[in-house]
Image 1 (cartoon, rainbow, N blue to C red):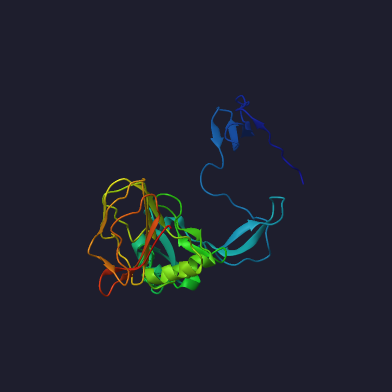
Image 2: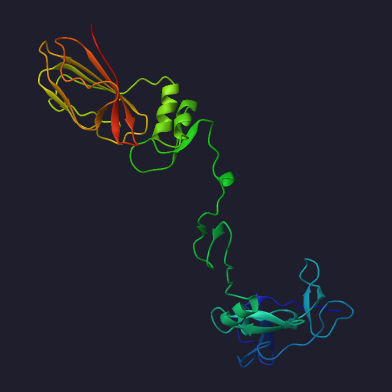
Length: 306
């Protein structure tokens, strides 16, 4: 069987009378002919062509054909129809969604419709218990809900929670010894003083050289001292809030001149007379016990340097 070979070329010269030249047009890559009148006829620019393709011996109607192998010359049945694939043309607007309405069937849904299908918007439940919230609102620790067991552990024994650093700020651990705890758990000031006395705590001293109106402060003073009294003295009622049985010692020494002493009515002689003068350059002690029942400082002892 003879074969005809066509080559790509530009349109040839007009052939001789009675001749027609067939060629492949370089620009269109299609078969064309030119007759002896110079008329060019292009082939393949119209409807479909005819002939067989190489593929399987049989195929399924409407299945998509795919290449078989890597030669680019053989076709195979792809096993899928065009209806098996979602068509982009179903979406017609921004935020459209494609949803299955049945086996192999898709429909378009708007964003609002899709949210309904998915159960959106999600409604956040309210929290209750130790941590509460209303919907998606901020979570809040409920008042009186957190137990001591769920607080941060302290680092060691003998610690108080508070703030030792000046100014507002985070809670800090403050050291508290066993002696400190013994005072802190006392019911009142009197019990605290008893504890401090048992611990051998030194008395609180207030000392001044001289005063015409010496007035002890029962909240800060256990012993009131005049070291060189230079004028007559009238002792005023102790300030502060004394407790039942609280003790007060007054010690007086003049400045080498005897000084008159007088006392507020709250000082009461109880078996011991209240002194009315100093003895030149002699130390004088006067002891009192507070009687809250009678609101009196009872004088229970008086002694003077020999």
